[in-house]
Length: 259
Image (cartoon, rainbow, N blue to C red; front, side, top):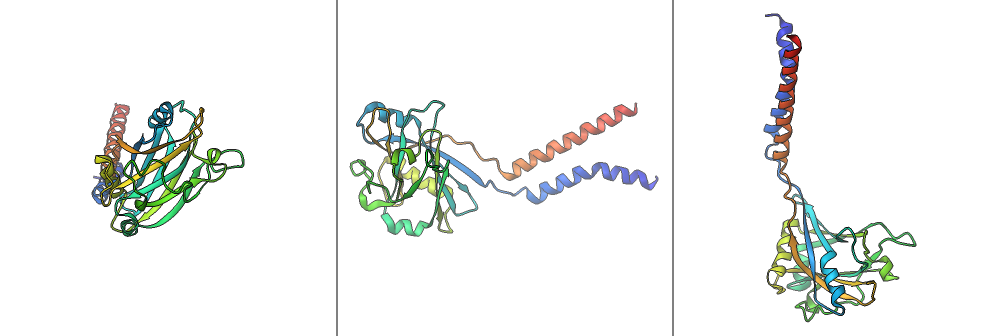
């Protein structure tokens, strides 16, 4: 057979060969970025309607890469028409206190605001909440000696807090042996029995700016079902199969055109 025949056949098969080669090389690629979403329970009830509204709309995402020690906590409001309220202070409590925290978290990587304060609206936070402890936290099983990190919105606190349509990211670097899934297990340890056992992590919020005034305190309450990340191998397999299907369809079209 002429050489150009083999060259033509080889070129037509090249996409499939390359796709299968990539599947072989990268089929072991693990899932990487994951996000878990949590709701909050009210631990005060200065105004039952405010407490119920906060429980319905306050959210926290915990995200990170399974291959990275960086973890990010994102605070925001859920719902298409959320009630007016502002997250003004955030508190992290860890069973075992700062000694355990220092072996698990090696650094605070700062805040990210969406949007940043522009002189009229937006979010702006600083280290150390005011008041220094979550109001009502002690009676909810969060002793002061277990407080390991806190932050609060800068004055004026309600406008610079996290209001509906805004969000705040707080990022930490974990010790090398930990990743986002470990943080989730610490949170779930608290959620399982609301007892701050050694290593359990609880996150509390102080919320103000309700339309009727007043403030309420909340503690992380439940993990919401989160999308399962698609492993790299599954994504690649799907892409490879799609490429092969496209190639087969093209061949059928070519054959039909020659008839």
